[in-house]
Length: 203
Length: 248
Ligand SMILES: [Fe+3]
Image (cartoon, rainbow over all chains, first blue to last red; front, side):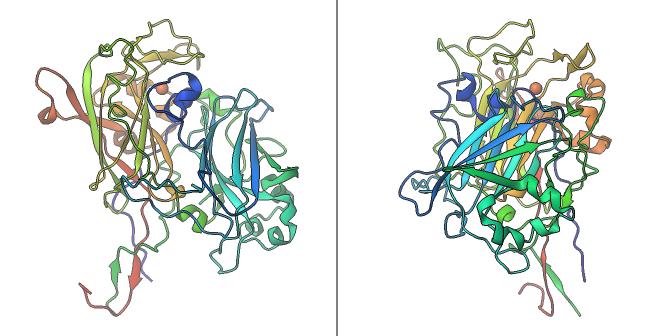
């Protein structure tokens, strides 16, 4: 078995710093007139199949302080478990559902995405994974973007057999990825450290 | 057996070299103290959810999106500072260009001040400088933008720390697992070697990779200096096909 090695090294990461909002959500921090709308604020642009939901992500540091200066991005499949493919350069076709969202964290360390509940996607073992959303978190004090996932509490059966959740040996820590439901809103609290530290991945 | 290696689109991404990247907990950079996860990361190969990612072919970029000298101008005049062009190629670890991907960048003004309500540095704001821009790479993976050289600035880390002049970059690639944020520094800047954020990276060669080179030949005469900054994203492991002849 050959193990090909890369010819170049990946560019090393550096923290997004305290002013990441300037670069990723300029309108949110009053740099207006450069781009019409911050990228990723709207995920649904037309008729889309699937259940409309809100996904609220709250992020806290090791002493419970909200991460007021961070940014969260999400990436997910549509209701049938498919990901939006690449859009051709200069095509006018904005996908009806982009699958990708970006929100600045508020003073309360919170971001809410208006999206649809994702369908199931096959895992590396060929079995369907439980519905989930990929999360990426950057901020001052985070040297390399944190990758994790959000799962849904009302998918207990699917969660029980999920490829990724089952890789987490300490079963109590699986709970750190499961969003609780209230009405149409799923909320996930992400803890960077401490008792309830979220499971982060090297994917 | 004569297996050959083809650059397979289905190949898994190379694992991140976590010794090349900064560690999460770096005491010299104090903001990591309560923000660095303590548990080790759970190692998983990317699944379909991380091997796919958003692309922005449909996103109409404005004419001035990559011109920080003009894109926030309030009175039609240029931003103040040393004018320069920054350009480079986005590649993957197999040295293949990454076309049609979004590159975003942000920076302080020539005095080292950010346009942000929480910024506390006394340096003056430039009314005509916003500090944000973006590009989509061309078919060969190149991006370019026009800006002014950002100033060094102080920050309250241990009381009197200074950042070297730098530009922040956010790059997408074509898979969510390639997502990267980094910072570009300037060749020859003595401030690089005293910076606690630069020092979160252990390997000098890795720091060198973040240092843009002065490109004297591409200078715009009587107008702008030119710096080149290439960016490497994670690459896909090639798929091995056995018993095929080369060139097949
Ligand atoms: Fe900065």
